[in-house]
Image (cartoon, rainbow over all chains, first blue to last red; front, side, top):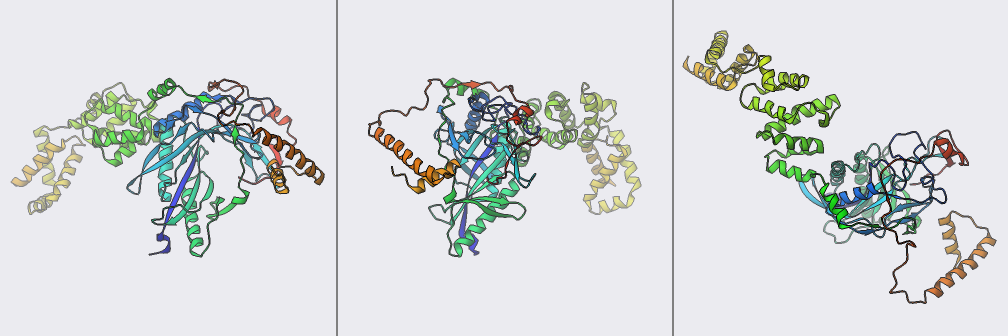
Length: 483
Length: 96
């Protein structure tokens, strides 16, 4: 047993989710990403004296929705605190956050990692604001400050130390991403920094009751980097302990180029944030009716839909995962199966044809031209054996997109694609194929029954896809057995 | 409360101030006085009194999520001691 196997990895996360509100947390500046530097600012985000913050209602609603989705207790009397520190991209000298009484308390999220279900407990969710952005590489002497992001609303989700591998962290982050997108409270875009996390990493001997000393890796905005950072940090801590050392509580930075973590500050230099209640913002009192109103606005959640798709519609886990990735697709599927009893065929159509089509068009189901009724008819046409699956997907689907007002049947007839089960029609084709390949017929009759596929293919080709496969198969067998 | 050199040095760090020896002596005495006064107040039994955080009784002062009242960049940068065409410029700092 390698020495590393003696230890267990323990990780807790602080996930920052940037909300997709139009305006900032405490003032009316625009929040859009990618604007020219210092164009989305005001006297409040610049922290001019005499200004007062005012809380964005949408931030409160977003926090409650996320709390409801993960089963938190909604704290009906929450308030804000000041977290004091000096940094150039924080003009006020403090960040407005919630320390003593956050808006959501507790909750949990079940994830599926390495084929095992794991429950991650949530400690709390609180509301806060983002800082501005510092750019250090534009001049040797100065840092450049862009305050567009200063005051953009964030939710911070703090988990218990329940992760036991970097993979679980990865899956959790993706699950949160999917959830915030379903709730439409954030775009969950990691590349643009809409989701970032700090990872608290420690190790302990397997079976140990207490946690080891932890180190915090700051600001991971790529899951690939987070996985590497955690793996590196776990190895570093184990090596240190095995060499007789002790892990010191530290804040670390991960360098994706070198792949190693380096200390930003030690415990002695740890920030003393001197939290105290923010007197400029009145407390937030949430009535039952406010919360109940948000409950009625909750969309179906991905994990519920997954269960419904696998149980009620008998879809495979794989299909259900693909269909529930995005809310629009899942809801479209639900709409579609209201119109057709062929649940699996509907899933196939959505996964194999409609989604690739939409990707190609860089479009979404919202603007998809075909109605679910028309798609249900399309599926029925295949299920009735009037057209083959291949013909339907390759010929009828594109024609339907061109003329969405026509029925799939009308298009199939117009393009002369209806399958033919007429005995005379099939007999003629079968005879032609048999005459053409006497050797293969002999081989078949000597017992190589697998050749039926070859004969089927030939008949289909001759019929230009119109021969009814079932009737053709039956007739081919009958004729071949007789000879 | 005992105001010693260690405390003064910690406060200097937190407030990003560098005090001269003379200022340190003065502030040590000022701080002692202030803290003594606070200690005096602590003699009162406040165990049954809720801390007063807010002077006003207002709750839920919320705004609708609407964009308005932004400053243009030129106005915003006007009061900066140093600026670039797009940015505020500050002495180089690297920390997270």
